[in-house]
Image (cartoon, rainbow, N blue to C red):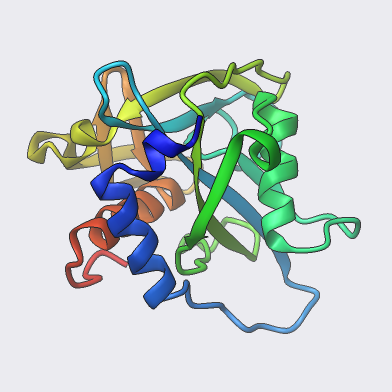
Length: 206
């Protein structure tokens, strides 16, 4: 049942914040590509909030190959909305049916890649809650999927700068560390915004 997660104080606060301050849109004319991702929260066994992350499988030519990410992908012509894109992509990648087993809370600000080497694209993040009983079945595009307690992302020791060896050379980036995973780039920016929205603080890490 979704009632328990919807009744969680942080979910209620987040839902209210997203309703009062809907995510800002980036209004750039086509043919700029658009995509959408799903920020999915559920109640874990301890009754605390957890967030779903995936690790993308490695494919040659994919700029996000092997990265830790949120479920999602590019909008298709058949998608009636960006929200529909997030729901469809989540279903395709993880078999989680957000239309049946989830509830949309709202949208965070749209964003674009900072690195010039990445393709020009606008990403719309949508925040959902899901039943605790959802079962993940990974597609071939997903190497791993795991739930991260929000408390782990709030831990001051998890937020840090790391140096990556990219095709364009070494680069220092902000990251959340979780176990053996480094969460950086667009996903780090989205999760930082989520935490700021929950805290009601200034959006300093955009």
